Length: 287
Figure 1 (tube, one colour):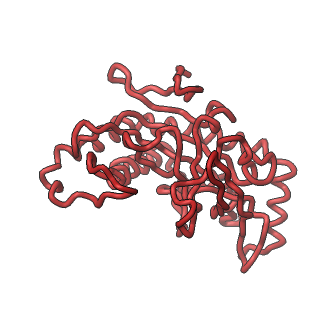
Figure 2 (tube, helix red, strand yellow):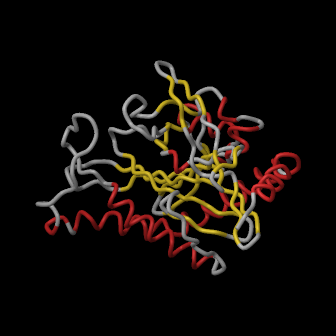
C-alpha cells in the first residue's frame, strides 16, 4: 500500500522537475488518441447511423427526455454515443497497442486505460443542436486536481473557485494528479471526445464531426502554472446552484489557445476523414 511519504515524494518530483514532461506526455497521447479516433471514424460513423435503420425496434420506448423544458424535437443520444462510439474506440485502442491494460477504477472517464507511464481517462460527450459545441460539461470525476492533501490513506484535491460572467461556484476535482500502480507512477491524463450530431428528424440524428480535447493535468491546472485561471477556460456548469457534485464547463476556445494541439476536430471531406485544428472564432484550418 502506498504511504503518505512515498506519495509526496513522487508529487514533489513532478512539481520540481517534470511539469514540462507532463505537457509532453499529454501531447504524445493526444496524438495517439487523435490517430486512433481517425482510424475508427468510419466504424464509429457506420454504427452511430445504424440507429436510424433500427428505429422500428426502439421508437416506442425512446430514452427519457432530459434537461430543463426539453423541446421534444430530438431523442437523447447519449446511449448511442456510449455504445457506438466508446466500444469502437476500445477495439481501436487494443488493435493499436496490445500492451494497453484496463485497470479497475470506480470513477473516471467512459474509457480508462493504462500505459507504461500514464493512466488515461477518455470520456465521450454527445452534442446536439441545442448544446454548445464549443464547451465540455465535465463532472468532478472527469477532471484531475492538485493532490495537495493526504487524508484517510488517500489523495485529496483542493477545491477550485470557478467564475463566469454571471455566477461563480466551488468546483471539486476528484481525479488525482497521478496514480501509482505496481510501484510505477502513472500521470493522470484526461481527454474528451465530443461527438457533434445534427437532427434531420426525430431519430434521424447523424454524426456531423468529432473533436478530441485534452484538459491539462491537475498539477498544471491547479498548482503551477495554475492554468485554471486562464480567462474563460473553466466556468460554472449547468447545475451550479442545485447539484451536490457540481459540474464545470470547459470552454474549448481558451483550451485551444493554451496549445493548438489540445483541440483537434475530425471531419469528413469528400468521403475521407481528416483532422483540423480548432481556431479562434470557430474558423478551422488544416494541420
